[in-house]
Length: 534
Image (cartoon, rainbow, N blue to C red; front, side):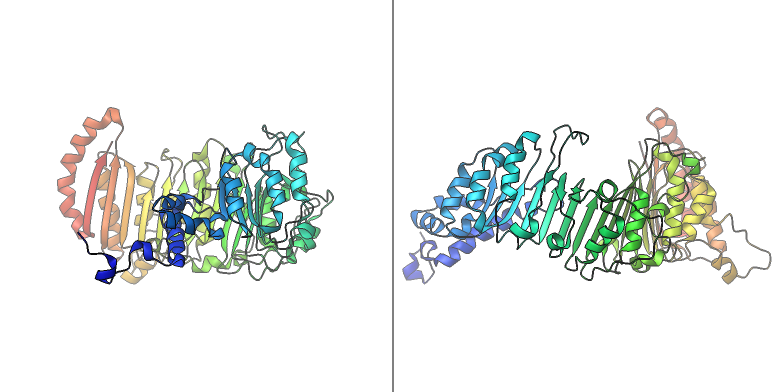
C-alpha cells in the first residue's frame, strides 16, 4: 500500500487547488479532441467535444463541486438533437461569454428563443442548414437581435432543401453594422448581405458562398470600393458571389486594391471572373492563394487555349509567390489541380498556391493543355521537387512535345515523381532530350545546357504500363542523358502496372528482363529499384 499523502510528502489528488483542477478539465478536452476543433471554412460546424470533460465530475464530490462552480467550463456548448445540455450549460455558465455550436437544424430553430435571451453574452454562433422558407421569420428575428459581443458568425443558409434559387428567397442579414458591433468573422451561405463599408470594414475573416447583396444594382467598381475599405481583412473567401451579384464587369481595367493584412485569398468563380479579381487585388508573396474555376462543358478540348491561364492575370508578376515556389504537385484525375509550396515536401507546410479546374467528364482530353499551362505558369519558379499524376490514357494524348515543355520548365528540379498515365515512351523521350539532338561540335557543357532537368537526382515513376521492351527504352534514355554529361541519379525507382488479364505474361517478361537491367542501370543510378503491380 502507498503511504498516505500526509506522511509521504506528496499531494493527494483530493488536495489539488481548484485552479489546477479546472486546468485538468480544460487540458483533457483539448488534448483528447484537438483534431476536431472546427475550422471556419467547413460547410458544417465540427464537434468541439466541449463537454467531454464532464466525465471527470464522477471522480468525487469535490471535483463535481469545482466543475459546477466554474462558469467558464460551461461556456462552449455543442448542441445536437435535443436542447437539454444547452439549457443546463446556459444556467451553469452564469455570466460567462458563450460559444454555441449547433449540429442539428431542428434543434437550432427550437433554440432561437434561448439564443435571443442570451444574446448579450454570445461571442460565437455556428448554425447548420438546411433551412426552409418557413424558417425565415425565426431567423430574421434572430438577426434583428442586438448581440454586442458577437465576434464570430457562421451560418449555412440554404433557403430551399432543393436549392431552387429561382424561387427561394435569400435570408437578409442587414443588421451587421448596427446589431453586431463586435463582429470580426463571418461565414454565410445563400444569404443576402449588405456589401457596404459600415457592415464589412471591421471584418478579419469573410467567407461568402452563393450569397447575394441587398443592392441589386451593384457594379464591379462599387464592389471594389467596398473591398478596398476592408483593410482589416486577413482571410477572404468568395464562392459564386461576384458572378451572381455584380453587374457591369469590365473586360479589363487598371485598378488595384490593396488589403495590407490579407493572409489568404480564395476565389471560386468562372475563370474570367477569377482573372478579373486576381488582377484587381494586390497579392503579397506570403498570401495563401486558392483559385477554383469550372470549364464550360461545351468547350472543345482541342481548342481550349490556356485552361489555367484564362483564370489568372495576364501578368504573372501579379502573383509574386511564383518566384518563391519550390514544391509542386500536379494532379490530373477527377479534377485538375496545381498545388505548390515555398518549402520542401518534407516540411508538410500549407500550399501557398493552389489552382483547381473542374472539367467535363472527359478529363483526359484536357490534360495536355493543363500540363502546358503548368509549364508556362511556373517556368520562372525555382521548383526543386515536383509530383505529376495523370489519369490513365493513350500515348496519343501525352506527346513528346507536351512532356518536353513540362521538363524544360524545371531546370532546378532535383526530385521528380511521375505517374504519367500509364504511358512510357513520350515522357522518357522528353526526359532524354530526344527533341534536342546532340550536334557534332557539341562540348559536354553545350550538351548539358540543352538537356532537360539537368539537376535531377531522384526519379520515381509509378503505374507505368508494362511493355516487353520498357526497360530497354528507359536504359536508352538514361544513356542519352549520360552522353550529355549529366551526373548519375541518386535514386531511380519504377513501378510497372499490368492489366489483370495480361498478368501472367507480364510477370514472365518482367522476371526475364529485370536481372539484365539491374546491373546495367548501376551506370546511371546509385540506387535502382523496380517492381510490377497488378
